[in-house]
Amino acid sequence: MKLAIEKSELQRGLARIQAIVEKRNSMPILANALLEASSAKSGGRLEIAATDLEVGIRGAHTADVKQKGSISVSARKLYDIVRELPEETVQLEAGDNAYLEIRCGRSRFSLAGAAAEEYPDLPDFKPGKLVTLPAAVLSVMIERTMYAASLDETRYNLNGVFFEVDTDAGKIRMVATDGHRLALVERSVGVEVSQLASGVIVPRKGLAELKRLVDEEDADEVEIGFEGNNGLARKGDVTLVMRLIEGEFPNYQQVIPKSIESQLTVGTNELIHALRRVALLSAERSRAIRVELQPGRVVVSSNNPDVGEAQEELDVDYDGDGLTIGFNARYLLDCLGAAGAKEVVLGLQNENAPVQVRPTDDSDSLAVVMPMRL
Image (tube, rainbow, N blue to C red; front, side, top):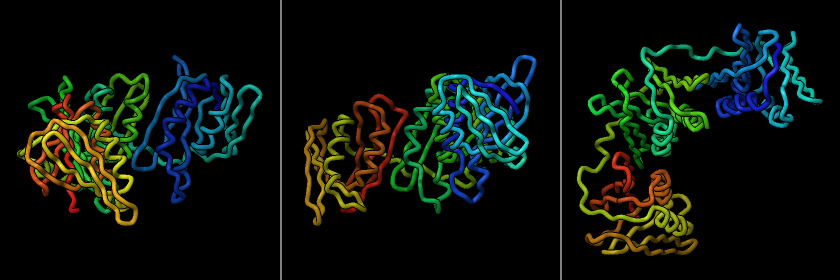
């Protein structure tokens, strides 16, 4: 393998795979990136790929390929080297001894690698149907749901975001829950979605990589598709593949309150800052805070015998009965931070029922937070 490639293009491709490469030593080869150079009449290209056996990504980059070939080298080391190089053309050459020679300007590196044949194959499948979705829509949907996915590995079916399609309404929906809170968002996408598989659970890591992909500067539309136990997303010359989570997602509709006895409207940032201040003196483990509602105002407080107590009062649009309810401050802060709205509406029933949080400017998004005993 022998080629020349612009430093900015190489750095961009290597940066894209850094979160995927496996950093643990269970299988050292997974800390590597796979570099494959190919040439054609229309020009050459360098493909950069990485996988952790659950999520994989492959991107193609324009290069002046003098000799095709492939090699596997440390993804982190190569990225660190390229990032420090001057803004010039980078020369890459793989030797017979699995070393990668890197030259740029007056800099020269020799990086130990491994034969490309030792690198595991990325999942290779072609879904029956790919649906093109706006990148900006996917970005918002992921941001407003992924925070609620469970981190508890024993609850494997909750370690991702549930993706389903409402063919009658032409909508896609994402739902996540960890048992303490739930996030849901749906969007009309203006395309035929009936061919898109419904009822799949996308893993948290795969979704995080998809978020990075749709947030890239040149991202306008992204093709996605699901088939069997695999998911695929494609943006231009970049393809992301992932293994979906097997299992049954719980009936999330049972968690969403069917009726709201009273509701209040409050400024999102105002409430966030009040919660953060009061949470400073909450119990380290439970992060318990007390929310007391009275007509026209809400009092947020915390009490920790070992540290002290805090209280803050806010003026709100509320004319219901008095109500006191306890919450984990972090759960409320997470859903408020993801709401992306100037104001939110909190829907309440009683002291023992979950609270429903909706952005005032988005009727297709909601979050549900379970109360806690004080």
